[in-house]
Amino acid sequence: MELQDNPQHKEGPVARTIEEQTAKLPSDIFLWAALGSMGVSLTLKCLGQKHTALFVGQWAAPFLLLGIYNKLVKLEGHDSQS
Image (cartoon, one colour):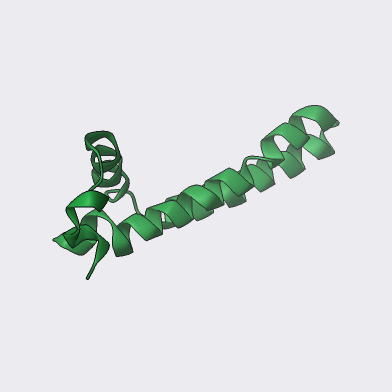
């Protein structure tokens, strides 16, 4: 029995709306955002902006996690039912 078929495991309206919107985004956007943040961080580091470089460089991991969430939604969430 799949989770989507069990009425006790239905998503709420907020999660369903987020899945519908997230599924519209191409997954590679998050990869490019992560790579971009690393590039901007490197540039800032070379320009002597150490603290700002560290701040921007930390964006890569959340972008990659959002990409994983996006892929899971496409495989198991909103798109798997249609």
